[in-house]
Length: 177
Image (cartoon, rainbow, N blue to C red):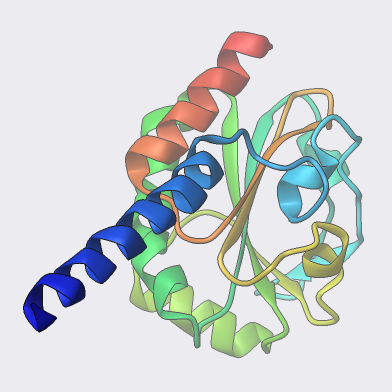
């Protein structure tokens, strides 16, 4: 009898979790928080420097689709995602798609060494004061934002993306332009 009650409790818990969790995962992304909350707005532009000390700005990328990835070297999911971002550049760079890696809060030397060790060839920007992380309401790292050719945020993602997810976001941006 005791074993039956235990199993009944487990089944009841699974049913309750299913009723609570399934609608959460099937619901469209919230427009209120995180980087997706500013979709449809003009992407903010900050004057930063790259990992070699040169001035950079998102304004220079108008006319291109930009995949902006916020990351840090201490972040294991960021490390895992970087090679797929490089593959994305290789697949879509000739179609007007640019990937920018925005290091959040680390030194240019640290960011440069990290990117070099992974064979990253896309631009690495240094956001020492983490302006982009704040404005995109990044809930953690990595955070990725897709900006269309007119400089408007199309999508925002918190957390690591697969190459297939990146490709789907870029294909949607290309189709909309």
